[in-house]
View 1 (tube, rainbow, N blue to C red):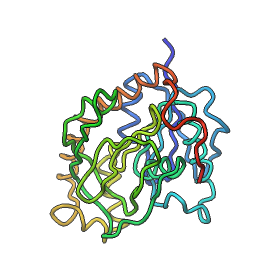
View 2 (spheres, rainbow, N blue to C red):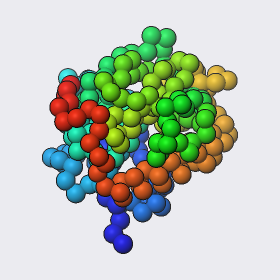
View 3 (cartoon, rainbow, N blue to C red):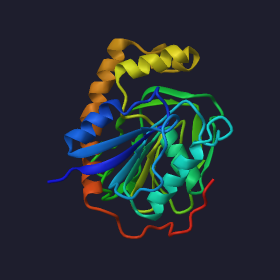
Length: 251
């Protein structure tokens, strides 16, 4: 049986696919990882069964300093219009929202950081990725921007007190999650060292190695099966036409 080929867009060296890559490969996926800031992105999604877009330290519309962001948004818009299963994480979720008509802005009260809980919405129903999650799954937050308005027709899947739009679905199978599920302890410690002021906003005043090790054990318990479900979704092929149709605004 041939493996399921996924395009993994990595906007920054600081945010590798890490644990998520291991989970996806274990589920039978073949990953083409492209470091978007240094390598050319494919011209289209031909040949790919799904897309994963990771996070990074830049803002979703910071094209002046990072002109390649426009190409990422274009591919994410293509994924939605072609009904290609997509998982967009943190900055990736913001890029997905911006590419399809949503609004991204800095958080008014500063960054949301640390191990947190998000709450599923009743609207998840029988969703193939979210239905089997706990009602309040553990996540890792490390972001200073937020999606203040979802694209027209998008479905809200999870929220938190500080950030309303924590997870959403655009069209039939393009998922955005504002939080991180893919990290390792080492990755997060590097983020904390690079931005100690933001790291101090984490619960109990910051990050410890023991605390992060425990958090990542909890994340794996919930989000590894989620990643496996995403591979199965990609294996099924393009979904029926979604609610956003074929004419999406590209920012």
